[in-house]
Length: 304
Image (cartoon, one colour):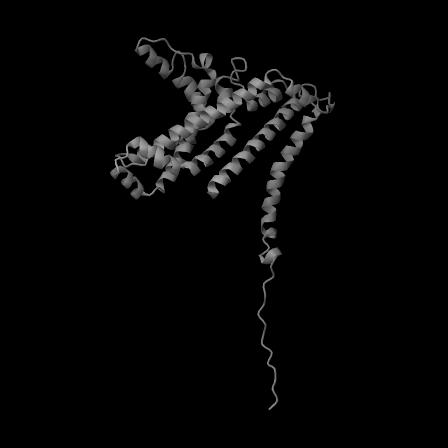
């Protein structure tokens, strides 16, 4: 009997993209394209106007300004002060929120009566809009005549403090810290939830005190979460505006004028769109430098 070859049906092989993987680019390309348009178009427009001479009061006086907008910005005598105030504001809020957030997270990680209600009250300021928060602090708490702090000081025989006149930057720092403390607290508390209870019990049995446990066990355990909080808050704090606009309007003088408020002044008070765009480009460059540094630092910490 002659041997015959039986042809078996061959299994279909799925078409794959580069590297043997399924090609998902057609699925994600619409969202990626929309994201690129959403981010690149405003950037291109800002760059375009930063090289143009454009005043809102005189729209007919337009033309190519070259680097003059950047030259005037960099030679502005208030620019160093504005940059310093921006750094001080961001640095002070970061120190306050991270330090207090770590302490409060350690305290709230223990069981106590009313723990759930206390946690809800602790994170509630984060959901208050910046404008509303600034109005609350300005009119109800820090007002030199009708504020709560003034009433408390007068009740013990002390004179009231004009917070926004005597300590304008510190007042803004307090308001912004009050807004962002719940964010740091929530992230750090979540990190502490993954801490092994046996490790804490062993430390207590060895006679370790509360401070030793906090600095030797809990803080190292929160190191990665602290890096994430540092990166997220720093990016958002560079654009603090509403709190300054509502409370001090950048004053007295330029005592509370940060880079975001400087851009507002150039665009909507001085009606200089070209100068404001140049300041916006400077803010974008600084924010990206900080973001790249922070992302690399956080990624390195997460890998360890």
